[in-house]
Image 1 (tube, rainbow, N blue to C red):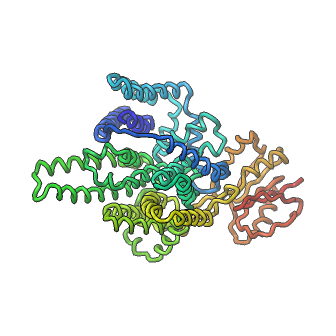
Image 2 (cartoon, rainbow, N blue to C red):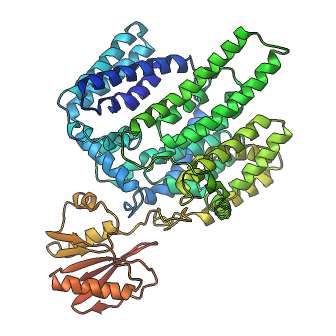
Image 3 (tube, rainbow, N blue to C red):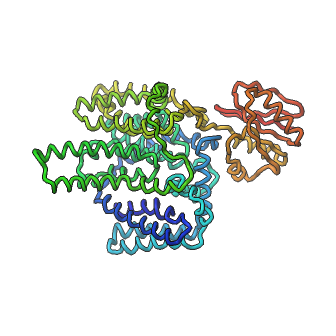
Length: 591
């Protein structure tokens, strides 16, 4: 595990050159050595021996679940890049990274990583040499002339989000094609598949029923939605799920025993993925400290010695350091980026209008699994597993309060609620296990009802397009899947030489992605924002007047109101509708 964690740390803080984002060479070297030193200490506190077992039944059940979930998500994975939302930013940053990585240096670094892993596995006496060779090679790469020199002067490229994610995202676009949407969505898909598989694996029911519960978890509306869109949170959700499914052990094991648990390694990796995981991590550590104090004082009654107190506190401080250092170290580097930061307002908690919104969000995003979670907590209480119930509840409250304190505008926002999924799933599991002990027909009925209700609540349409405004309640930050890909292909096939005017561009859209994908772009193209007058017919008339005055042959109009009545033609312009299940584009063209 030492070499594996070493590779993760190197990816997170050395290959990602936070330490090199400074103009002074002396400052760069200080941060470089600080980064290496903190990494060595983190590895020392984090690692122990770990044994993981695989069996054929687990592999077979995973492949069966993969086939079902891939079938359900295939069209969504290949859907058009949405208008608005942050997926455009993540795709373009990944695309730029994949294009900048030089092939020769990439091969050398991959070989050095393989050497490092192999020496950690078979030739431990050479581990220090291989690790030093890898680190020195990375340092020399960034200190010399390299493809990232221009963006290193603008820290936002590397530090806006934890950049380790983009190295993962870039693998398939780099190896296969930078212009296939599905290749950018593989990491979130695998992450959510992993969440469903873990739930399936721990369900403790017969084989067909077990796969059914995996499908039930995968079709929870919030899981279904984020399985096929590139956001940073899904890998963190997978790691959190591993932790929550082993919550009893990871809360109760001592600081000497905890590093032998697989869930421990998931816990210490969470902070590498997203800075907002800090609420989950701090809450977990607080609950663990309470549990450890209670158990330790009971075991050492009537009065522990000062030496035992110091040993206990030192062990728990080591746990806290190992868990928090990745996220805190990243947040420190992020302070150099001009971006929105956490700004708590206690008065937000007194706004009573937000709580019905939260209740609505729970039902729409988690469906019956909210009731399963409550029922599972009751089962745990009957079994006297009070610490598990307390931890699940605390994690949910901590994540909710963290975002409420920051701003009420995003209360109930589905992407923020992703971190509620792990405790809800883990609590639900105890209810499904209890049901499995009852009559088999009861379990079958419950499984059928849960999948059916999930699909009824599903925000993913049959054509793979997602419901507009889903998971948004007080502010519109959601994705809108306008069929721009189809519109551009239609233009290429029918009017490849015409002048084109795109309207409704209130936000940036990555047209260049589709120019490159279809190997074509209009000779003359411009874009204008919406007039937002409220009268869409008048807006269309105005934009067509502009197109006629300025000699545009084609106008791509983004429909704002899906109830708009579209005429057959307007003046010299004829009409072609290009639509999907959620949105419509109108192509006005002069034949």
